Image (cartoon, rainbow, N blue to C red; front, side):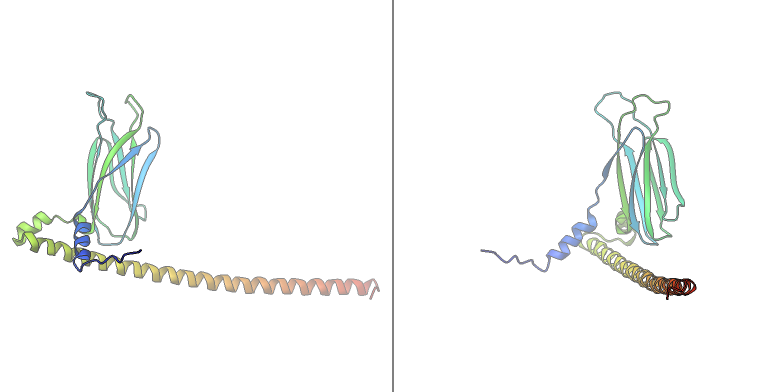
Length: 215
């Protein structure tokens, strides 16, 4: 028999708190030849912070493989570029809406080995990139009050994201309607051309048969 699961009124608040305070790094395996990229769709006026480093292998005394990194905006502007490093970081505030891409590749030149390399990447955006320790020291808040400030920031971030999604949906709907209108007009134009060509063919055949005195 199925049982109803009841959630207390505190559950969404706790889930939101966990969501806003949890930040995990991802590991990327970079091939010896090629590029590994990751992207995230971000709206404008969002702070982005990231740290990356090469993960050491199990071989003691083995020199870390160096990598190169490049971050580009949706319009192809170069926001960060670093070469022949084992670790690095970048920070910027977005000025364009769209996919921001971070690419990494291994520098095999002048290095031995040539195997796969693993890097750790911690990518923070928006509310996650805010330095809450500095906020707490500056405003002299702590404990529950600090957590409430984090929740307030999370709610604002969610609201901004919903507004962004709403605007994107409106833009996509407008593009879809424009495309549908163009397709409709193109279909009408194509139908008119077909009717015109058919009429000309009938007129030509009729004229031809009359010349030959077949009709």
